[in-house]
Amino acid sequence: MGRKGDVVYNPNRREKVLVVETGAENGGHRLAMLVTQEPTDVRMPEHLHPKQRESFTIKAGALTYVLAGGAPQLARAGETLIVEPGVPHNWWNGGPETLEMVGVIEPAGRWLEFMETIYGLINEGKIKPGGGANPLQMAVIAWEFKDEWVPTAIPKAVRVLVLPVLAMIGRVLGYRPTYPRFAEHESAVASV
Image 1 (cartoon, rainbow, N blue to C red):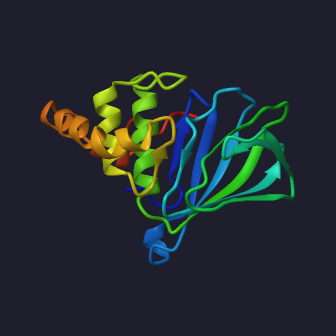
Image 2: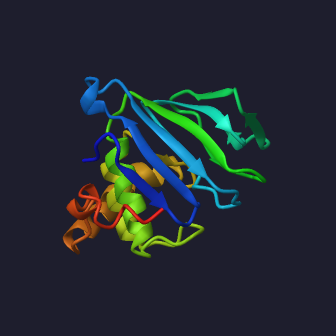
């Protein structure tokens, strides 16, 4: 698992994440990250965190975000956006400046492990912009990290009834929820 000072990079979203504080350092209370993102329209899929509060403190530029399917809004330098557990959201840097912000997940849970896995797969070309990925691989990840990340595009009945079956099939076929090579930052860390 990641350590303070590690950097992960998502080329699809033009985003660099520096780990500032891990849950291992503070009894699991929080994960803090310095996020730098160049302007992009690439959004992560709308999602929610069932048990975690997420905050974004904007240092430079502006964060474009959508909460609970509403209209896009902006958080500018000096402002903090707080997303409570269970609130669907997504965000991106709508530009034109580089976005710099501190992101905090409370409690830390396994968010860093999830992020390392997703960004590692992106860096290997296994997740494309717009979410193109092997559905069985994503089912294994989504089921494993269901306490950290819930993609809202998948209806609740499917998440409860179908996702565990797809995850089981994916595991039988060799897909894993995490890969040691990403925690070791052989693939997840790109030259930035």
